[in-house]
Length: 305
Image (cartoon, rainbow, N blue to C red; front, side):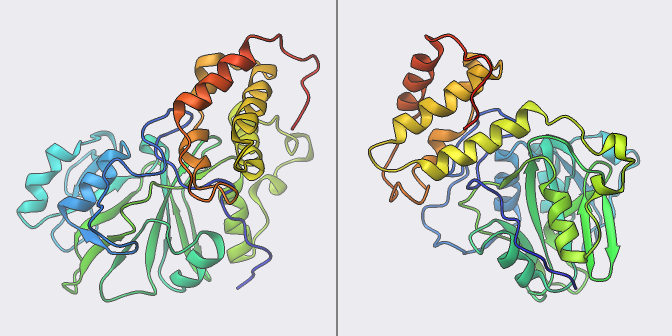
């Protein structure tokens, strides 16, 4: 197994896909009576993923194979699959739908979780197999197709694949979701490729392309999430409005609209940034900073933070 350096997401977990603002760091399906790390299962797991705008498929009881022809295109909501779950069936989340993919490991799962994420990250595990598990992540841009590696075992699940998240394993062990109070973490651009390359010891995908294709243009969403991570890193008590203003100026200079800039999840994350000490920071404060930034003309050329 090859491990270079950890490639952790550069901003705390959030809810929502792409740049849409759904709910923030505190998950919309919150469980205030559960301590951090306390798992949930069954219907509670479905409600969690439904709050993340996931879509589902019906799987065999105590199995992982979907039971309906054409299941990748059905995109069932939670309401449709709940009766199937209540009758003893398993339920899977459609990978690649709602920008949600999964890292799926059959061994060394705790090490993978600790190296690239952290123990407060939401993940799916069965009760009798702590060395195996799945981590859902949301891609903000540049989706990567499904991949499977044999040594060490690792799968990246995307379009056309699904991950069973609710029900029971053939052994009878319950499938559980750990950390349901935290939203699915966001990765941007090539972070999935970098994590895979570090873990299994293969070159990053873009390095295998012809030289003329290796310098693909960076997408606007990639840049925005880098700026977001930078702003969160700089945010401290007393300068969080300034950090939000600088972030808004950067987006403005890059051609973003004020509405698009307001959708960035800066206020949802900044209270949990290292320099914020958990002090609340409201979306209203961030939007004031955005409005202030957009009353000024864009800088030409844009100054990079």
